[in-house]
Length: 262
Length: 262
DNA sequence: TTCCTATAGAACAAAAACGATCAAAATAAC
DNA sequence: GTTATTTTGATCGTTTTTGTTCTATAGGAA
Image 1 (cartoon, chains in turn yellow, purple, green, orange):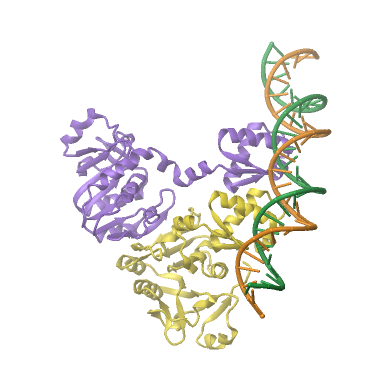
Image 2: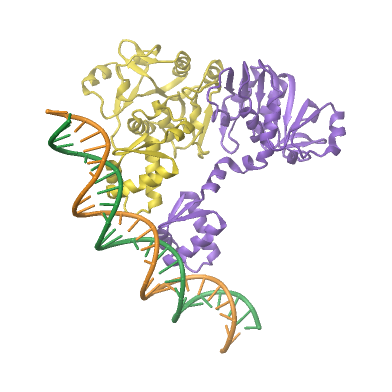
């Protein structure tokens, strides 16, 4: 894919990758960008000079100082590759003309990113980060629910948010969760976020799509949002344990596994 | 497609491409514009002189400085120093325990920045940018109104926003305007934004503080928000024309001039 | 600790891109 | 139509970038 690119382009790709993943290895960059390892090292040295990254043995990490500025939380970076591919797969389930709820979370954020190009879409979300790189895409209305800004998870919570949700009937819901278990159902670590999601579920007349990388499956956090049975479709990543498939499909959930390697 | 064009046209094409892609290569430009690489190099040198791009080996990247200004939008940059000092002065009018409306705009955004350190404050705003560098300040609740995201002015508009505003009674309003004239009153270039501000004015029981640098005074834009008489305090910058003072104070508006040099 | 493997860095050679110069072509001026 | 000016392209030496080889070093395992 990638040959015949100028150094500046290659370096900006490295910056993108390190912003996305928080960490890159010389080896993987060498393969991905199709240049020798020494070239990658030289690039990393240049970029270290500019301050966007810090070199380590075998690669480089995103600069701590810049990281803080960007407000990239650890959580956003965790399983980033999985979340991106889940986002891409989930976005395919959205059709032109849909009105969709999207709750907050690093996985659902990835879905929003991949909705570009859809037509006549209305997104209602309490994810405050959504506006960040949403440069006025034609054909897509982005509606924030409003509410109290909770910076830890970059989302909007409280009655104002719930009120807005209650004024909408959506055709689909993209729901991120923190835990997903047969016994306790869908759980969230923050009470108020669970409340918003609950309201969204009630106001969705069409498909409820749950996005969760495999680390969430089987996990239980503090606040119960809903039983698993509200989910129509579960989009998860490639390392899904096939042993669970039957048990999940038995309660009427369709499983979609996203592809590795974007 | 492309032969027989004058240099200026070719160069403006290059500018368009670099604005779009952020980066161009000499080689691809040479092919796309059907001229030799040396010509492209000369074009890039010329354009580098003008400051729109920075040359690199093999091509050029969009100028960092211009890029930054691009994101901030023309409006944010205009009279930045004035706006900052107005923001600082206006923030001093806010007391601990206040519940304040803040409408959207580059000047009011500066006010938000300087509210750090206040206690027990509740900010209700339709400025989507507010969350950007609001790192969870203790003692301050930031509440977004919700609404349709309007990327051109980074704000939230529409019924959802107005509904939220209508659920609040604020003790103060920080109001940015685009024009401020005796005859037409306070005006805004965007209909929906005027609507939000109107709702905020109605729901404010205390002080209405208008923040406007001197370039706004006397200007009229398209949509009337309110007559000037709704304003209690006008915070403007140091170059305020003292000849207008009496006339403005006569309608009951207190004038605060912010200091130059932050 | 000691060994071992993987990574880093230096030096050199090859390839690509650059800049300067000059001639040819296109355009403008007369 | 002729001349002057600008613009473009080609050549060639120079600089930058890249990859290979080799040596040194870091980090993990026994």
